[in-house]
Image (cartoon, rainbow, N blue to C red; front, top):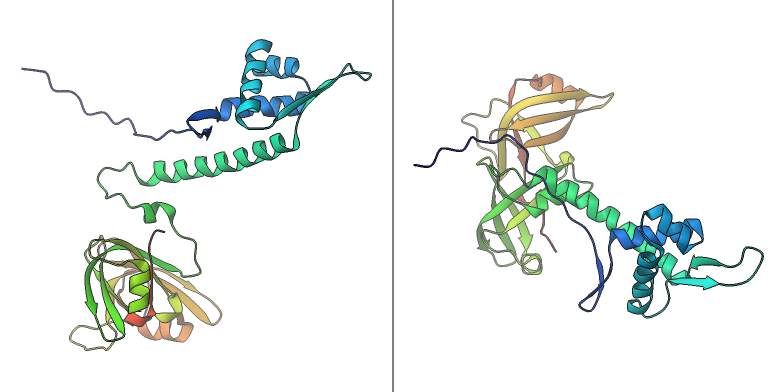
Length: 274
């Protein structure tokens, strides 16, 4: 019988690198572009090779390969003059280096987002959650389309949230088709905080608002006129609501108080990954 392996607490992580290719051949990755950067700063392949820690031949072979694959020179040498000549990046080489740096920075940021959000094996993977869309809507809920009901003009979309609560959105049929909505599809539901009403002691009451998300007040941030109330929803999500200072006081909104966020299905905006 094989001995049981001890569970490791070492964290899983992601790594990755970017390469630019021409057809099925690799033009270069971070190593070669670091070499181009050294050429630009040193003005010499010899000095760049020394700064980079490789031989002159290895540096020249890499640069020559990049020049050929790029279709036009990225590095050019001039002869003569007081200093005996110099080496520099061509305008195309400079633009390509700058673009690679921008792409690599974006890639590293995306890897960091993935590393922070996606390696928890106890949670489902959601690209939309990783991307964490930047919009003016204060509330963003990532969920799964659980039902679609077609109407004469508008469609009703029911969305199951990870914590067990459900949202309902009403969108035009044209919008539903443009988004390609279907059951089991991951979507983001956006709700402006100003479109939400807060209620307490709703047990037994009937309201016309289709969406009723129950939870416990977590944070209350008073202002001169309005107050922001963050409700920790049953199941794990949060929702932020803007109410007048008078309403917050009248409702007795403070941390620990049970409250329900109410908003119409028409106040929900849906988004999907492109």
